[in-house]
Amino acid sequence: MKSIRTLTIALASLIAVPALAQDATTDTTSDAASKRFAVVGGAAILKPDRDPAPGLKIDGDVAPVISASWYATPNIAVELWGAADKFNHRVKADGAGKIGTVDQQPIALSGQYHFGTPDQVMRPFLGLGYYESNFSNESIGGDGAHVGLETAKGAIATAGMDFNINETWFARTDVRYMKGDAGVRVAGQGTGEELTIDPWVVGVGIGARF
Image (cartoon, rainbow, N blue to C red):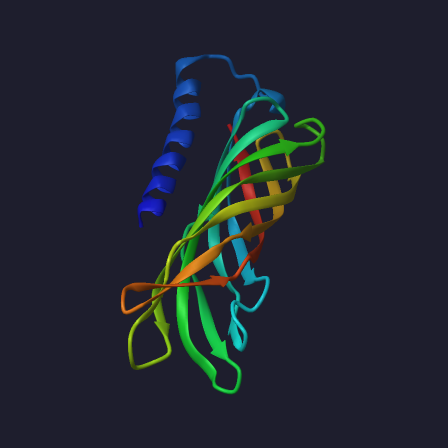
């Protein structure tokens, strides 16, 4: 929940700054290159890249996502991205079917490079940064000691494309890869074991520049 509160505060700040700036000036420049903030809302599917352990599988899920970016230059941006709700995953074991569920909610901060000029119709971008993904509501293995997962942390890589509709609105599609392990807890105690999930996140959304 701390990560989500941080995301909410950051997004509110990024939205408020350009709004205040517009109120404080009569300059109505509409050139896309002069806009320094962007907010994108959409949906994404998160799918683990691999089985986290031999004989164990985790299904993918769809959840809403949101991001806010500040453009230091027309080509270089800093993006705060995260899931607006939790991804819910079914956990399966070979020969036993579904053995439980677990939720996760990632948040990430990345630096990005946007190719070309802000007003071109199709504009690709690449990014690299750091993410954390909080796991919660673990219900794995039925009766017995509770099995929990610690927060996964690591690097995130992003590749995407913006499709400009006009100087303010654009559509976006992107792919993200998160590399990081989650420690395993049993009955609240660390076991020293880690699960490697390394999910892909494929998303689409609509954005606005300010």
